[in-house]
Length: 282
Ligand code: AMP
Image 1 (cartoon, rainbow, N blue to C red):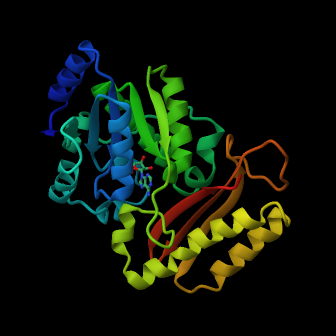
Image 2 (tube, protein in one colour):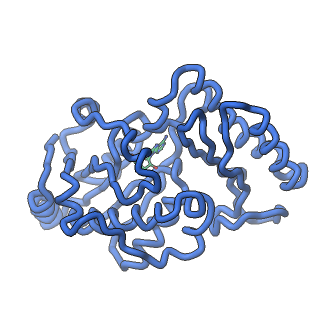
Image 3 (tube, rainbow, N blue to C red):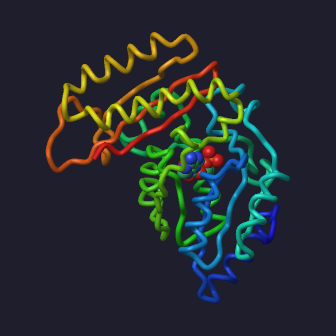
């Protein structure tokens, strides 16, 4: 495993590997690595000759400065975890000034209606920040395949849109959600929760499961009302949104049709820590 800090060195290395016929897989992360990240990296290693994992906390995708300040950083520990994986791994740990040479500017992209809902609505500018950094990282790494978690399903659709928009020769691959025992989706933010809070946070997953059991048995409106009510009755949890949507467009639905795929999405705060999760319903 190699750790590289400078983008010119990384670009040179991936270009040489590609000249030699290697396929490059790319897994962008913000560090504080957990089993969810490692599952993406294992899939990337299985489907590519050489894998680049970036560890970069991207300032432009945070809508709240305090969220950026509190984001867990532990590069030493991250690198130790990656050392257990494979020797065909390159870890890219750039400084912010090397990625944002001209200051922290966010580029605006026409990401379409998918970007305006849920996370786009509740975290203004978030997806433009994500797209800004990914455009830069793709331009450094030149991957053949890029791996993203379904944990951030809306982001996954947006990355696919970005790649089409920029006409990049990259296949975007979605990877399934890794969960803790009990069902809580793994997240770097879980580190900010103690045992009691993690137990309470299970209401997110349980709400999604309930949607999976009931979405075609009762009206979507009453299902949403019941879940919103559950959160109102819980003093430590604050619901941002619970939505049942068309999995392709992310449009909210109030009636289920045959031959369509649906997904439930949830975002809530527990004692100030914001968690998101989603589940395929059919
Ligand atoms: P992050 O470091 O949070 O930006 O995440 C980096 C990548 O890991 C993104 O593609 C996430 O969707 C993915 N990821 C994060 N948590 C999970 C999880 N629990 N299961 C699967 N993928 C995940």
